[in-house]
Image (cartoon, rainbow, N blue to C red):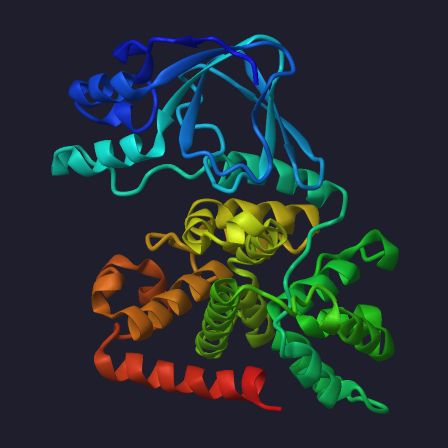
Length: 410
């Protein structure tokens, strides 16, 4: 890489993270250790696999990013782009100057030290995501989605379970209904196919009986068996496999509780609630798949956790829109984490999923993880007389039974 090194002034660093959120003396100290480089068109700043221990801030000009799959992107410099250029090491990107550009390089040890030394009240709870985990990922995801290349990872044990259930001769409708939901990724892919233009469906789908009606038993069976072994990662990094299993179990638990709550209403079908619970945060799955395909991400699973927290909801919304699922499922994906959500009149699918998440989090994370029951309108709509320990315990016990019947047998 060509480029003349120039002294850095503290004011040049101040607009960028983490210095923008800290007292000015920390930018002064960091500037003492920083270097500024002027780049010419085509100069390479970072290469795939690089382990250099420097955070680069693009203060002027543009750079071009090229990942493992030769997917290109562009980053424009200036204070609007506050975070360092992709700082994951080893790097998952080649980064080249796109025209003339300027960068400031600060050793990672200095950035880390600045954050650790800063006053407690000036520290951020969490640094922003690496660009490769947020805007870059989401932009690439939307391209992959438009090109019909989204991968949803299948649990390693799903194939065997499905083969045992429906891999033999003729199958019944009930057998298929209980098989396809073994794995949210498989369920979503079958839904997607049934909702596609290939099936010429005029009405969006919202439950699996509708899918069966549209596809028929044999086509559904063949699709389920096809998807059971596709997108399964045999060599999944243990930390990522743990996260995949954890998120699948969470979706299944929420779905099971949603069934119990739907049966307490007169206007919500249990099968609708099951799918709404299973799909409510479906955007987690492609993030894990993306991490698997980029080894540097797999080595930093904590970054995957942060990506899930930051963009899984938007990712799920984008998927459901693109795949033309029912509008009510889109509404669930948009509002599932809104404790203050209030349906007009009778409870709706969002009410069901919000309440199901409440009971799930209450049982797994404790009372401090959820608001007071009176602050969750969905609970008030669904449970006459209010929530008390006995009612909560009853709903959770019934949810465990549904979970066993729907997801764990076989």
